[in-house]
Image 1 (cartoon, helix red, strand yellow):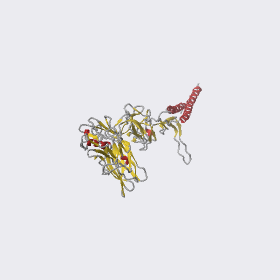
Image 2: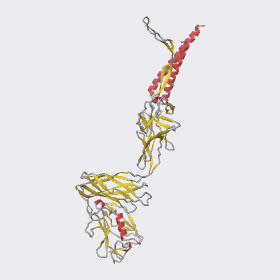
Image 3: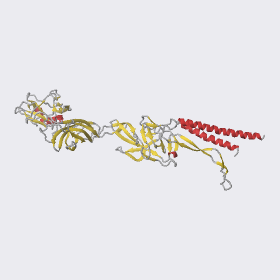
Length: 569
């Protein structure tokens, strides 16, 4: 090979080292590019000129080795380094990083793959890359269950409204004190004696309300047509909502008695107790008068009270006053025994909060277990007063709930625009009955909620996107998918941190993060570039030295050719 061959050998050295320098420069330029994967250059010698093939040894000759002259170097391959970069938290919910193997699946004109998780939401609340490609994943069905059958664009509808859901179930939790006393007695509230106007006869259930007068002032009617009666009472020491009753020309004493019963939350449908609860008329001091008797339910938490000014009219008077007393049957106002009360909220179909009060009273003890009576009231019951249900809880000798009745309560929502009635099942299965512990009862969970809007979201390690609504609810919005390849080195770099599948990479295997060998996701974080600056600067020194040495070969060859030309002169 002549001197000109050395020139071309030197040029090949320049070419390969220049390619290496270009690669190093690209790595350094992208040292701060999100999820950038560095490259390395691998060289290989070019083909050889064979001067002698060599000979085999014989008995008389030892043989010779081949004699070959190389023609320089060539770039064998430029190889991607897909090792993971450091993950840095950003706190931005749309940012994602893959902790392990795998690629995000994105789609524009074609399906591509990337490690760059710097995503954002477009004007349609779709998750996209900075270049506008749609991030691919799995959607959800109407019940927020992941549908992993096919890939689709991921939508995160920030600001979207979640429709309210009516409560169907409420779970109660706590303990009832088995060592408490069995309930006995009730509240007995007696009004002053009443007569008819003029004092001629005692009032009965059918007497017109406008004909009723106090026995102390028989000439003056206690009620007038058009007046509004307001009742404010207390139950178990808790103030009851004010109830109103408008007197008409057809209003009767029975109408007023029903008003008292409903607005004091007296449940007359419970199994027989002594004395029986309700509102009755009882003979007064003479044969021409009578008074109201309001009898409450058993248990201290059902104790009733109407203050002196608890019953007023729109005219400003107090036509009736009630005091604790003893009725004609000899029952004295004295509600005692173990009982517990709790209040909680449920929701109707419009998401309106509906208040519910539940009172449990120890009703009986036996060698087989104890029985408690519970009462349910609601001030938001629009028809029929406060009472919305009652039932029993029976516990075994180990304090576990054995059976229950009447657990489905119904609350009338007429006139509110919501579905009516609101039916709520009270689940007491978490309740126990153990001695020596103060009775407690709370509503642990309920499945209704008001309307709300999607305020924020987060991404779990398995790619599940969970939305948080202003009503305190959470809901699965979708799931980010990832792809793995048998040979990631075979991917084609499409620029902008995007890769395309090729014959060398094999087909993508798409699944949820953590499956098929893929890594898990880290939300609110980004993967950094895997470029090692110190290594790149070291490689730059080696590459520049190789470039300089190759140029020296060219220079030396040129000088020798010049000397050869000069020798002929």
